[in-house]
Amino acid sequence: MHTLDLHSGTSDDILSLDNIRSVLQRLEDTIVFQLIERAQFARNQKMYEPLAFKELEEKEGWKGTWVEWFLKETESSHAKLRRFEAPDEYPFTDLKQLPKPILASVEYPPLLHPHNINVNNKILDYYTKQIVPNITKKFGEDSDDGHYGSAAIRDVEVLSALSRRIHFGMFVSESKFRSDPASFIPNIHSKNREALAALITKPAVEAALLIRLAEKARVYGQDMNRPASKDDEREREAKIEVEEVVKIYKTFVIPLTKEVEVDYLLTRLQGLSPEEVQRLSNQPPN
Amino acid sequence: MHTLDLHSGTSDDILSLDNIRSVLQRLEDTIVFQLIERAQFARNQKMYEPLAFKELEEKEGWKGTWVEWFLKETESSHAKLRRFEAPDEYPFTDLKQLPKPILASVEYPPLLHPHNINVNNKILDYYTKQIVPNITKKFGEDSDDGHYGSAAIRDVEVLSALSRRIHFGMFVSESKFRSDPASFIPNIHSKNREALAALITKPAVEAALLIRLAEKARVYGQDMNRPASKDDEREREAKIEVEEVVKIYKTFVIPLTKEVEVDYLLTRLQGLSPEEVQRLSNQPPN
Image 1 (cartoon, helix red, strand yellow):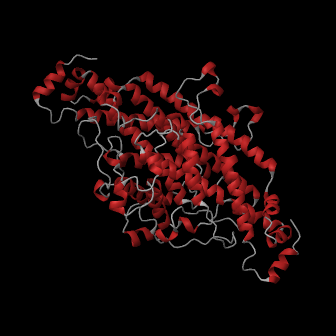
Image 2 (image 1 turned 180 degrees about the vertical axis):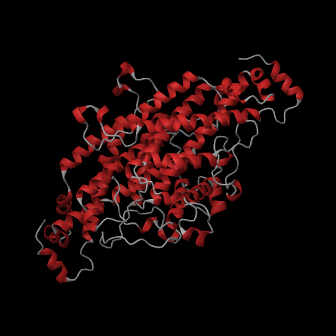
């Protein structure tokens, strides 16, 4: 089972590092798949420029971009089904613009401390300015194939997966905080971001991730519609450049996840009584 | 370039068998990817039963299933962006329930003869009764993980790709009809489905497709999150059973595509004058 069972798991099960790791690894597959799907279309820069489709403004009053409109439409349907009540889902659209859920709320076990973290603006910005141009390079910087709908569907998929991946860092923070609050508390009080980052970072895990990701991009990105040379599938043409996929994680996903993780830790004691903080400070690590 | 450029290509370019083949092969990748994505969630049979979520009826007046509601919502957004004006896109939702496009129409080159073919009801039925139970077998027949939103997003992706693949058969029919109308016309007049099917079928191409598809399912379905035995990636665990993917094409996609292809051919002379039919009958094959 790769999916976090938020509906029937206990807090301890959900926040176990084994479970978190399997969710994050399965999300790598989704991100690689959906990047490959997006990379079959041209850059289509028009989709990322505000007011580039005048009908969206005239008929829908929409002043943002084509892709932001697609995100708003998609997230509106999903909001009705209470997607954004789940502690691992964060919308790109302002919650005030989204409809209320029509389904009754689900009871989630207590997982995250209350917070207001949402870095989707940063994700959309990097995606538009870096990821799309890089993965569509083969078509050219000014490439436009008119497939705005198909490309935007992929954009929404990639963006949602990246968002879930990056915000999932808060589960890592919460899990590690719970297992040893005494180590975190002084650094939270002193707002020592570097020390907090060091407490949740394992360089060996990051290195292994990048190796695994490169292998996924190589294997899943093989173009099996062209003949392999010498019957060796390692020689097949690639639908996406392995280095581009690795770069997305190395220069963006991992650093931004860490930022989210530390931001979350900095809010972790808010609203707790001094007695409660004292109790946590005295709790032995497990 | 794998995508049919409906916006700038000429009819001849778009209907070339080379172009059609590359679109169909690229769609195989999408179908395999999205099946793998769906297969990470449980069967969730409740999503496919009408009125199983009473709030959808109470608050949205929706008497269909959860997945049909998702299709309607998704297709409503896409309809505004004129998706269903494209000659290779067919909605699952009744067109009368979908909003009008807000974008001005695109001029497509003349491609298909006017027709009313839409087999999406058959696709949804087979998908619900055969594909979903088969690809989620590992979780059990009654498996339910509560991930109805995530699973439905994948359902919509698989269904849209299957629909595009199967209806694309009409491009095959049109292409082959144009290259040799004289061979088709007597069989259209006599409604000889078998003869028409024989004119558009190449058993060697179908056999090659099934081999290629099995290879795609094997390669793209590798679970790279678990260690490979003996460093041989052919031994990795599979996220989807290769035989299930092949079966979907063999018992469903290929036969239903053929049905669509023949149905289309049977309407191909409607509205033509006797003189036009005569002219086509005299046209030498190319």
